[in-house]
Image (tube, rainbow, N blue to C red; front, side):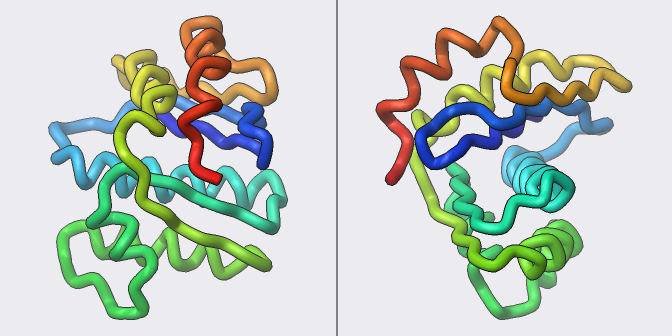
Length: 139
């Protein structure tokens, strides 16, 4: 899976790819990626956060005050725990085009113990995509 952390101008602050054992449904994988993104932001001390995701079901679950009793409910709970530490946060739905860089980054995480985290200087495989995809980021 891949996670991209950008600043308000669309520049990369951090990028992470990580492997998940087993065969996950795409929705579960996206929930795990959202959880990882919130945890990275907590660890880096960010306080004003805007998350975007391309699975509307996950965005709605995170934005809901209702308890999520689905299989991914514990992941949604972990996201809620993380975002409580931020002064301000939003989760918004975007089309898949806006998350293409994260999708490409996820292709690097093909083996166990291949988790990698980059700061400011992302892997070369996504550097060209970063520049071309800034134009599709939501404002």
